[in-house]
Length: 154
Image (cartoon, rainbow, N blue to C red; front, side):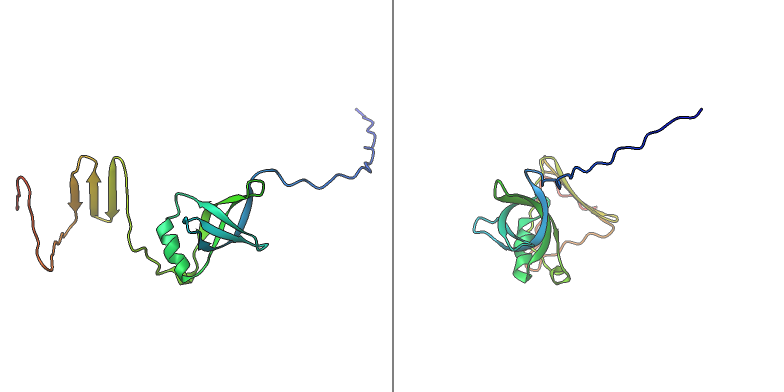
């Protein structure tokens, strides 16, 4: 069967470039400091600086310690209409390899478990604590005290 096809008419209408979407846009830059309230300040590539919220997966204590060494590359979002941003990812440089926080705290409503190979420590909400390992050492440079309702050795 032979079909006739007609060529498409050529369009001479110019289309406008897409408008940037309203609301937050992806940005990257450097975290250069913390505000007095503890919010990170992101210096974007165009030089603007904006105080941002910090994702809960980024430890604020570590960030404070890392900024004492130098700025950090970061990515996040910026909402020009609101004049605010959020940082959701940081990229530490080699100069940050040894950064450690002075205090590290964990909180959970049910259980905290640390595990490495055959060793583990578990804290339960009922107050029980389990320490397991092939060799367990307890040492006190001044004193070591074991107390409890019943203390069993072997």
